[in-house]
Image (cartoon, rainbow, N blue to C red; front, side):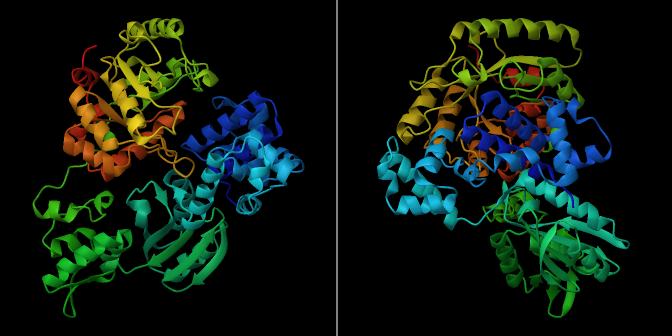
Length: 573
């Protein structure tokens, strides 16, 4: 049975959670979390690396002991250290760590004093008013827990796009190995590059549907076969992902791909245009009466209703059909357009590679520049840089740049925005930098007005260039803080600042709606990976996907330019 990177990372994170709840050594906990983060960001399967007998201890931050644990999970599907820890601390307590306001100390207290072992017993305790018996658990904490539990009950589970990629790519590879298969293509929200995926539709064309269906339902990652038919089957994978496979005839392939890509609203609008033109459009083709007039290719569906091809990322019925009708569809940015990355971290703070390693990795991607944006001093937990250490890093980057040809390391910082809107470091040192990225990393609970004013005051600083991850959300873990992003976009335009589209798969922040608003206002967007290791630089593709959903063109993105061209857009401090 294949073991995916996401499952390895989940095991390591769960072990870290349980150790932290138990009060284990912080460095040991951090080592497991760092390893989980690394595994999630690997562009290759750890299982493939083990099969190729590669030395996992050569991965950044992975020593021999951790390498043995990774190999153990791949080869056995289990982690003995986790199973041992679960004898002391209930495994389901790990789920409680995701709730805002519940850190390891509080989770441990809930376990010890209220015998809470999982979400169900937590919910029972909250509903029964038992929190009132505990010191330090105020009404706000209880309200946040209630809100989390209500939302979790009402919201169907969805998987991060990057996680779905790992799971789906293995399945696609397996299906493409069936003799006689011509095409196996994912559709749905996966193809539209939505930040999370609820289920996946896969389309195939082949000579023998029976054989690919047998391969599909017999895939070793399948835990439940919901249906098994000649042209359609449905399964649940071990990850919980629901997958449908449909075999379609060649003459219907384009129409089926359009139909199952969606969105539903987009498809309804296209079908309505077809009706006005005397056509019937469905997953089988484009018909005038009983005669098929198109559907073998996807662009035939659009041509039938007098429209140019509309890229999958735009198909949300948010004006793309009207734009197509008027010849105003954006020419969407591509990964090939990206010339540099404007946020990354090194071992100086919480990164897992030094500056030179990060630069070499960026160069291998064909980039011309990379900004090293280590944290500022307020981030004490990651040993953030004070002015003295930042000055030392500036000198180090100057030295490295003298050794480089055709590539530039940008002297930068991810500086904390303090509660009063001041920046965490003085202007004297910030003026020495190429790029200053401002970020909110604490006090997420300020009111909408105060949070917005806080960030706008930071933007007033002439050293400020880019606002990082503007809403502060972590998808599935932390909601966006209260902030008026539309007002911030207007403020950025007035002050000559930029906003970041953070490409980390758990952030993808800004979302597509505000990316489009930035475009309409003329505010340039920096697509940055927030990489903490060389392998995480690959997250750029996810950021580009989000940018495309937000209608961004090459010119709308700051880092599609050479550094010399980009720096001319920066205001002078």
